[in-house]
Length: 185
Image (tube, rainbow, N blue to C red; front, side):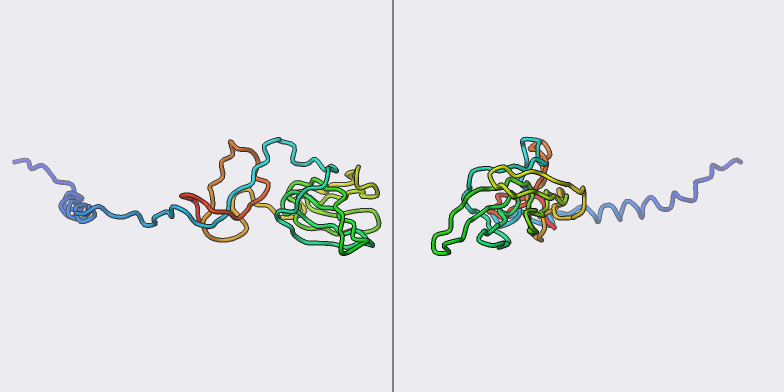
């Protein structure tokens, strides 16, 4: 008489079936993390023009997110975080006069030596001739010197808006009230 052999693994089938049945919950399970409806967090700042390497003089702008300052003689230079540098005359400290704004995408740092201003344009080091603040000139650029702007993640921890590359290149991050953020670090 010829007997059909049962493969050795067949004995695992009932064990596997019992194990899988134990994995199915009887009640609905809450997600591991519930997303807040509103929370302070980070939002990407997008450049929609495509030209984020341009450096140019503009009319004075309002200071919205003022950053680091540098004083040279009777001129104060103040970073507008992520956007550029304010040029302010302080001959009369009680009456400062905004004279120009230097548009430099991603600017966060600055230094001045003679008539040259050194700052970051996103992750590049740029040298700008500021001898005439109404018509500054880009003198030099060294690419990828810094790791100032991460286009994937914000500089801080917590919730943030997920990056949507359809909106443009991420040139910075700003803190603001977020609605239903889906990303967290």
